[in-house]
Length: 157
Image (cartoon, rainbow, N blue to C red; front, side, top):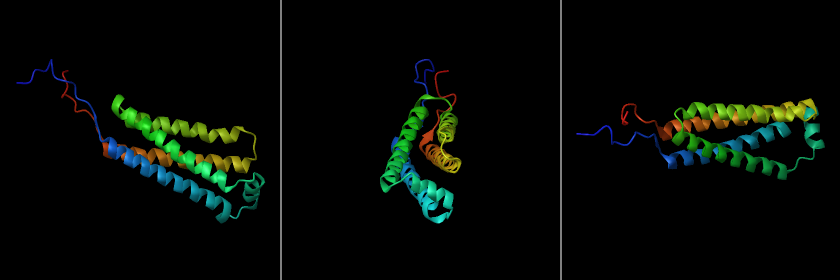
């Protein structure tokens, strides 16, 4: 017979290798998304004002590479935050979603407060929102496949 007073409390189960493989895949998708958005803004959307703003800023391939590395690193940081939340909090997916959404909104508002040209600020803000929501939705899906919450009633109380 199991002694309920001396049993260990139930803990959530996280498949860390699946979570991190999904986080890495998400980081690659986000990098591709940033590259495609950059290509669309530069070459496909034949908007002279927006193209002029990009050219005036002398954006180079080095700037795109920096954006790609930043997207990759930020996605891995989000995966780390998600991993910690899965192990330590009672509602990890809800908390993760809200953290990413609020961080994305703040990051999207930054270009709008710099006093730059409105078109470029709005384009940067929209791009930031798209990337943030992509990270949130993909990593939440990865977490659902990698996480099994503790079963109620399986602990000592």
